[in-house]
Figure 1 (cartoon, rainbow, N blue to C red):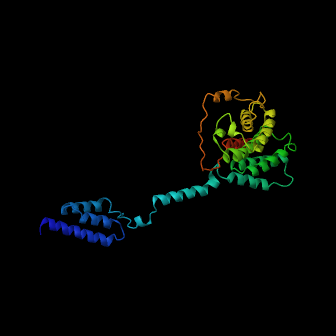
Figure 2: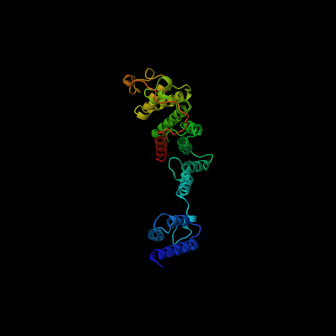
Figure 3: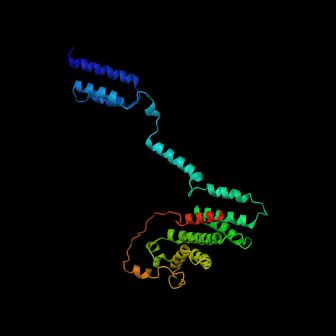
Length: 295
């Protein structure tokens, strides 16, 4: 028997052995391709041996069932994302509600005759957490009750905590204004300072309520720069900036002339995309209330 015939028989024996020990794997088709291709017998044998030695033709010699049981990368990704989703409620400091549930538990454990200061602290924290999670109406309910308790807890509540509650109430009203106007009725003017034209709110109760509480805050602390800035922004959404902003609170009075240097353009074309987001300042407000309440 010549060398070519011997090589052909060795290759055939290898193929038969492989078929009997590795059934159900895709390597069969690949090995058959090697055996029936246009290559010479010697080259076919070499490629077949390499397939066995390098990759096992698609399987693992140590674990023959691995290719059938190991999930795909996409399935593993989905499982990981689901684990993250389930852990978010308890572990994520911003998107989760574990802190809210903890404060709720403490609030409902209060006795009916609990001191006003204790009820005030917990209600203020509840309101901040609810706003952080985008539950604006529930936030205002808690914050409003906390605000009503200020006279009863007078002398026990720090100025910092009172200011934080006033600021958070104003911020929650601005969040409602943003949702009702900038999100649901958005256009290019809503995103460019100073806000004017199509950016002026048609539903104005949110901004007006925000200004009411910001005035109270700035009367107590005229140096509250974040409050001053939001006062100016809220006034822009009502079309009253800068004429009706008190000079001591006015910021960027020359902003209108600065905008004139740039031509108006349609940089915000209408789309069918609709999304609700979170107000960037909410986190800092929640942190300030939580910090103040713990002192």
